[in-house]
Length: 261
Image 1 (spheres, rainbow, N blue to C red):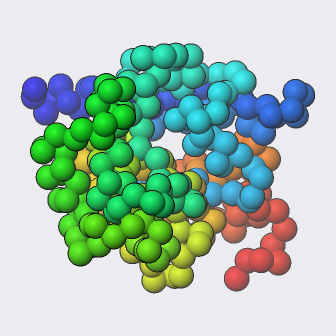
Image 2 (spheres, rainbow, N blue to C red):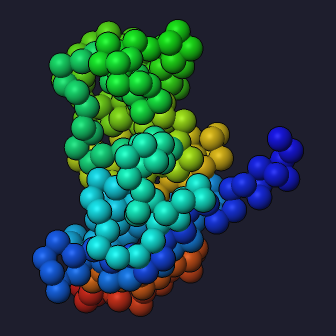
């Protein structure tokens, strides 16, 4: 495949159109979100708690079903996909969770390998029958996130930062075309938070894929993001470069100004 064809293949590959989500009828959390993601790199999504950032990511990977709108991905509407088609699309969307979502009783290497379950038959998945290629790839990813010596430890023996590294390795193990990270640094100290953002940036660049990252720390977001999306009350109020975001934008996103430096 030529590089030109690859570039065309990836253009507008994630398009969100008129996305709405209501948990309670008549009380929408998302109020018509329109976002077009076509470039690799970190896209930071900022906004106050309860504004719909996590709901947006969970709609994209169909952990929850949207109420209305479309999520166009890989020439299909992910919001309408079911059964085998949904399974095929979801394995291309890697997810990193705020609370890690590891299988605590499994080893670190086993947790990373679960990123391949979407590519296996139900029988293979039940037996945990991974190929040698997948096993080798999992060890390579553990080395990339600095956890080689922890491969055979149980996941529940790790620190928070180490668990998040495992979560990132597991998501990348899917060979995704987009990474989603829901508040991946919120439980971490400042140094570890930077290290986690560095990993997300690195994999985004190496794999040539976008990483949509929900994040509360505006300064940390500005440091790593190529693009920032500001949400408030279920709508997008800013979408542009980190350099373009002003105190006025931040007041519009978060309300008030007493929290500003």
